[in-house]
Image (cartoon, rainbow, N blue to C red; front, side):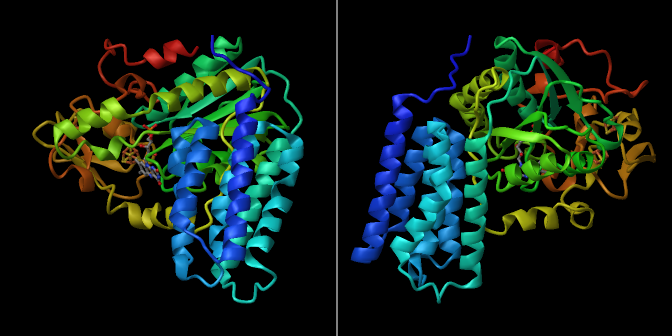
Length: 447
Ligand SMILES: Cc1cc2nc3c(=O)[nH]c(=O)nc-3n(C[C@H](O)[C@H](O)[C@H](O)COP(=O)(O)O)c2cc1C
Ligand code: SF4
Ligand code: SF4
């Protein structure tokens, strides 16, 4: 059984004291001595965040703070205090989150405002528009962190709906770790595999929801965004946990999902994510030894065990997960701008590897948007791809590929084959030959 607790240990308060001391030293050195070294502060901040949360994902996520600094013009920026603010807010939010203290949570925004004033002085006249964007988005993050700390404890859910969207099996693997934690804590878990939004009509009757998905273009996949906007049942105040995997740059995915859940009446109570860079479109190009190394290295064990711990804590009604960090720069705009039907036709053009294709037509019958058709016996694509990756996952001969990633003729080999859905739910008469490889093991493990 996974060890869980709703009380912070002494270690959390020690991390918090260290974080407060580092932030105070930063303010003093910036203001009194005019001395600052962003890379050093960032390195210290990242270590504090990773140590306090015990999450390698936090190590990756903290990268946003130094990117904000660089975008603001680095050391030459007229107001280094504004450029350093995301580092301070990150360190404060992560260490405060671990104390689980409402009092500390309530102090986050005023403390960071005071820090900015002390480090910068009273003259803010030279702060450019992007400087104010950084200040504004940092304030949004701190308000989210305060709201998280102030939330009343939730009743342990008896039944949890676990909605899993996963293309190459990574998210399903991560969600299984979370699901195992919930099962170990005595919750009943209703596993629902999400493929495509118009056909996902689940009523979500459970006491709580866990939403698991891969980050696609710095946000949840479009299909999931559409489902949340138009079809997702109302939450009526029920708690929801946000779970995702990505290659290392989740950007503002948790903020976007938080907003969408709120719009549908759910109460987001936490989030966690894991680092899984290998996915459908990676197609394992490059030397085999590199992939063997990556497969051994990732996902990082402590990321996965964090998911199990979070699952157990969530099922017991304890506050859990990772604090929200808001990335104060515009990649979140590039995501929706680049991942759309006007652009996707270029990198995601389908391609059936003729030497392997047996013209079975499974991909054609599967495609939820009717994009594929058989021409001269081989599948051809025209129109918009929703990036459901069903055609790639379903192809029995592994010949369906995506042009930009497969010109080298490599076949798609998911690391977590056992977690890749091989059949489109609720569609009769379509699918690969009888599944004898135990590839539905995950669905059996989380009933
Ligand atoms: C089309 C596409 C877009 C992606 N965009 C991002 C991204 O913006 N940021 C990121 O960190 N990872 C990104 N990834 C990586 C996936 O989020 C990551 O590998 C994930 O674990 C895949 O999960 P799955 O196997 O459950 O589909 C992208 C992957 C795909 C296929
Ligand atoms: S072409 Fe393939 S990935 Fe695109 S929507 Fe159709 S089945 Fe999904
Ligand atoms: S599923 Fe694969 S083998 Fe069958 S027609 Fe499509 S590309 Fe060819």
